[in-house]
Length: 466
Image (cartoon, rainbow, N blue to C red; front, side, top):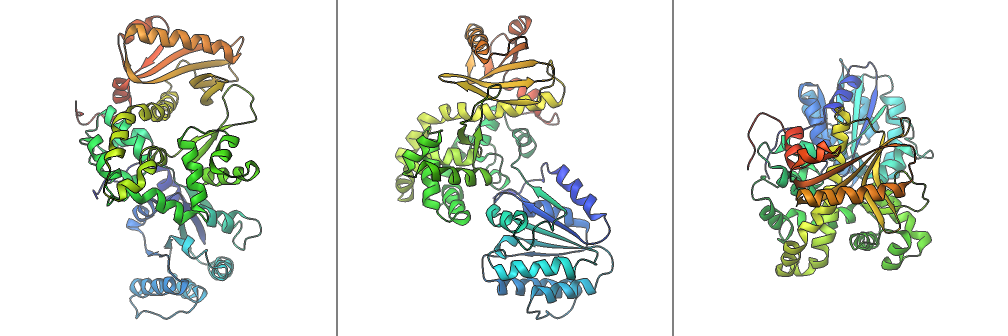
């Protein structure tokens, strides 16, 4: 594993610093899927702070209380105490208070498995620490347990937190900070298999990216080969059912009835599984932008899971037994097509960055896919107040000028189907490469390719790989 510099998270650090400067007890939750960098964020924040930090493990609560006792002894320079309850441990911490002290309980969700400990922490928060100057930071990867404990009205801990930081994966643009010499082409490939999850990025050097993908996913001893199954088994009570649901989506089943039929689940029960997969950030439910529709379509939000279920899951047993040839052949022939799907998300993020920088003809307030029956537009960006629309097609391929014009003309045809009469309409194209972009721009089109990604997104300090 390669150690990387701390990338992004400036806003989260500013929030933690602001809360740290407050007086009195402060409770902060840091959430997000596993491997997203919760521990790294908080430990970065703690570098110049007085702090007690404990990483809990998936073991009995008594074991984790003993770990807390050990850190209390280390911090205060005393023999390791033998507090038998968390209440006693925090009562001692509060009694020693001389200024702001941060207590960081990493993977607190392992304690939430015990209802008696969850109830005890209500007393810790309300009675023991309420009058102290302690800043208590709790991190949790188990989204389900965290929601039940802090956001369910019936929970003892409901409404106790002062702030919740829900960490998301790094955006596509951050890959250029992580890998200073990364080419835009390789950045797309890396993002398409890691979804910007920091722990996964640590497994890549950014050189020979496709070969690194093969090594990380099709070797039975590789971390990313088993990671998807491990996460489902850790997070969910019925991992086999969720596995089948995700397999259905990977096979192009995007409607509830299609997913239910493939997964042998009653349609009325399927919604619950899909909602939980949305909550933990693996899937997303999309509605067509610019059109009223009741029935959404389900797609992968997490591109790591999208890649894994497309290329690893169908060949899992063969790879595990040391026979990856079929999986590798599938990858070699199908990866470029998969990148077309992933590139839509990259294109969406690129459009949002341009929007934030004011580099579009208008500022949009809504962006997403549009579809109706057999027609689809990759990106539709709207400003409903100004009645302006930007229609964009995204193509993971090199386009000659004539091909690009054909795509744009067809986009104009599809735009008429959206029904935005009286709106100002602009048409755009994002592709791997586009021949004679200036000619297209002179005709009023917006066009971008990977050279524009490099120019706009990549830091200017070092030259890129060719």
